[in-house]
Image (cartoon, rainbow, N blue to C red; front, side, top):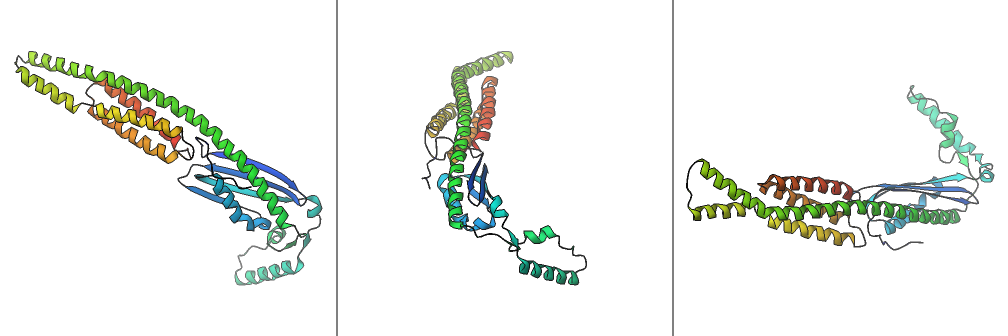
Amino acid sequence: MNRAKTTPLTCSMTAFARQEASTPWGALTWELRSVNHRYLEIALRLPEELRSLEPRVRELVNTRLVRGKVDGTLRFQLGEAVAGAIEMNEEQVQRLLVAASHLRGLASDVAPLRAVDILRWPGALKTPSLDVESLSSAALETLSAAMDEFVKTRSREGARMQEFMLQRLQTMEQLVVQAKELIPDATRIFRERLETRLKEIKQQLDPARLEQEIVLFAHKSDVTEEIDRLTAHFAEIRRVFSQSGPIGRRLDFLMQELNREANTLSSKSTDTRLTNVAVELKVLIEQVREQVQNIE
């Protein structure tokens, strides 16, 4: 029944699955929900009859998932034939009534017990003996089927998210190519502006000093390293997307690195066109980062 923890290429941490099964004792219904979370956190709600299943349920979920906040609920509805054989445990009910009467004697503001409250108390009803072992096996089989659908749902959404992110990545790559082409032109424009400014103030500048200023400007505004690192990060992101297993944390780290390089690109820019490229890059990076938060 347990499967190895093998994760498709890109999985979302958001999913829902519901699976039902009929047994000789009644109906079993599993509902699974998950949202994004830094680690794998499992919260279970099981009926009293199957409370002992919790360790095995956790083990099964752990073999299939790596990250996400998972809520699992198992409901057990007694069949009509079994429900018709339920009897009230008069001894237990009598003890409850005595305890309630004693409590009201200690505190006058205690509300009286309602019949429905009494019947909900553990042991107040005598239920026919159930084959707990067979019922537990059915519950685990139903959970396994629910997990199959659950993982498929996470995979389908993950595939759509990957497509979205790769589209944004392609646009970012085009912007970086555009930025690279702007670098020589930015240096040329700076030279022209400097020469024009010198003419306006009617001051001659030694050609060697002029070249020195141009070189100093080119060095301060050089974004070649940032562009090279952005390009390397893009290649790494594509490589990560091609891997199996959980990739969310690695992608989150790469988004932080992309954002850092885009900020440096913007701060070094002396050309409005280059600044606009950096701004567009940061917008795209943020769009992808928001999606990455939901990747397993």
